[in-house]
Length: 222
Image 1 (cartoon, rainbow, N blue to C red):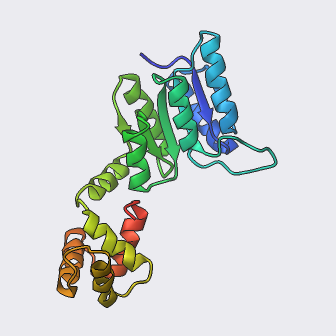
Image 2: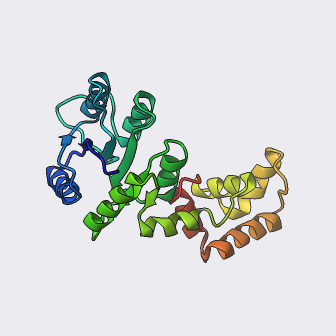
């Protein structure tokens, strides 16, 4: 069953117009929109009080600050509060954000129903997402599926994370064993550190430690 009442939380007017057109193509004509997260939460609570609940929220993650102070400063916090107000509300994130750790968290912790990345052909992607979640199914953009798969391809141990974190802080590889020894972290030999880094780089197809560190930052591992 297609959605009846949709709220769009998006601070770019051109994007809002594009989303409204996509929804209209699906026969959804009752849409509200707001440029602010505080207003979005207010609309959702009011719709519940009026017993005419919004059944789909489409929201961006990043909202530019302006002259108007906001209690809710972004889409993630908005979704978190929406989940408390109405746990059953369908939530579709439409954002340029492509970090796997962020997308993964939104599905696993905040139980969003769809994630569409702003990119080429995103109108087609958005339409498919709305149709999919109307059938009570989960939707994720194809390019992000590959990103999530890659993130989950290698399981980083606590030991791995310590070593990568030290490298990211500027610690030289040859100085890592001293830190491990001081903090009673084993194995602490230089050969063990080298072997650990070599395995991670091989599994993730990197040739340099810098690439490994950058990857872990991008995916929220460190």
